[in-house]
Figure (tube, rainbow, N blue to C red):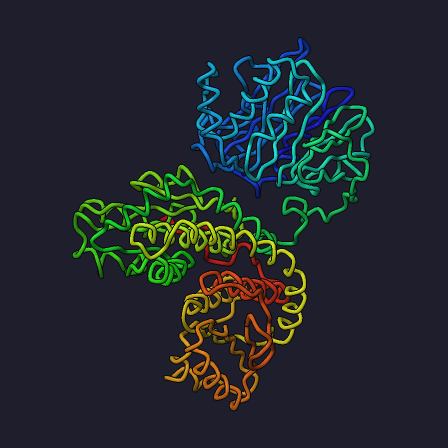
Amino acid sequence: MGGIFGAVCSGIIKQSAIKNGLKRLIYRGYDGAGVAYIDDLGRIQVRKAPGHIDKVSKKIDLDNIPSSIALGHIRYANRGWPEYRNTHPIQDCSGRIAVVHDGIIENYEEIRSRLEAKGHIFKSTTDTEVIAHLIEEYLASGNPPKEAIARATREMRGLYSYAVVISPEKCIYAVNMGQPIVLGVGSDPKCMYISSDIPSLYGYAEYAAIARERSLSIVCDTGFKIYDIDTLEEIREIETKRVKYMSEAVDKAGYPHYMLKEIYEIPEAMVRTTVSLMDKYLKLASMIVYGGKDIYIIGNGTSYHAGLVAAYYFSDLAETSVNVISAAEFPYYALDNISTGSVIIAISQSGETSDVINSVKLAKQRGAVIVGVTNVLGSRLTLESNIYLPIGAGPEMAVPATKTFVSTIVALAILASYTGLYTGSYDSNEVNNLVRSIKELSKDISKSMDIMDSKISKIADKLKGWESMYVASSGVNYPIALEGALKFKEASMIHSEGMQLGELRHGPIVLVRKGYPVIFIKPVEEQAIKLYERVAREVLSRGSEIITISQDPEGYGEIIKVNKTSRILSPIVSVIPLQLLAYRLGSVKSLPIDTPPGLAKAITT
């Protein structure tokens, strides 16, 4: 993942324009930044460095670009470690082409092998580099740039966008293959802009032209044209939007808080996870799990809850029992039982959680094999793991984890299904169907998000006066009740307890009184429905304010209906309304939702 921001002007690009645009895209990456521009002699010059843009911009002087055309990028490391050679822009063999890229190319290894056999020299470990060399190959065959780019794009499978400059031409070529590309026009008649989102254009463009999927845009200082990538016919009906945002929302893609933006990014993050997980590493990781004499899943907070969900996945899909333990408790509970043959699945979205890293190191000393699951390449967890699986959710800026939680359970579901191939409880068709179902569900969630959010906003107004609540469920959604309660603490600063449905009757029910909020996630397991109904009736008899999250319209209290899906994927649709409600309660209380007091994104000490 990454953010793209470029400009083509009739004169020298405004000072700091590229830097400002990239800084507004910080939510799309923080592992490196760079820019490519064409100098007075028609040669491409590249400035880039790994690291946060605040440091990188000074190091490579992003404020001053002595050119009328420049293409910038801010990187989130997904394929290839966060180091200089993998930072964008990335060039071809000749140095005539510079590419910046957002997304994932699924078949890059196959393309890279073919191009290397033809003599192309690759310098990075990214999937991005195949774009530059593939375009170079088609240009060398006599194709003009537009045709070369279109032909190269048709060969690359995946969910991505990219932009390219080709010297000595004074135009930017941009491709949308499922990731956003917008063109900025109007504020400065001497310049045209290109970006990954509309808010980053604020102050530079009056309106944005939206490049549709499977399109090639050619942007010059005199204007732009957009073509269909398959036919190369010009697209004349183009959607446009005004570039008008509150200044504080510019760097959050137009949202008031990162948390809300990241909840709305869940559908995209789900798909990103499915394409980030490479088959060969899934096979290796699942073979390790299958061969383990005992298997432990460790994590803290949200990652711990994801591990609890994964226990159901391994049981259902792989007929394998796993032990899920808080990483903070692991040294005192399980360490004495760890030896050669033990497998630790360690989960940390940041990859830097101190309890996880400490437990991993202790387990390795006793001979355990570590399978890391993280969102950050180059983190300590990736260094300590024997093999790691990147969830590929993209940067998450808000402290309350939302999209990374969903991406983590997607990754763990796929890992469990691959493990099932070795145990014989799952077959390759079922694995493919699971991945297909995840992608289909992502589309359904995207369509229903606004309607659900609107209803939840009204519920938040009713609950805002309460300082305590319960969240309860059974079966695979029991861990989601725990995760929902955590989100209410973090984002709403409401004391909330998550619990198994039956446990609510064994003590906690004494606090339930008139109006007391109790949120039920209606179980998807048929055998647990009667328990839900019995507990809900008892709570209702005490005058509780009941909310039920359900895939069907039947239930007690106010129903929040979620997308219909399988038992395995039900935790995804169940957690989103809890995240939204936690956010909306925090919002009506005017709380610092993205940075709750006393919390940090990664607890590293």
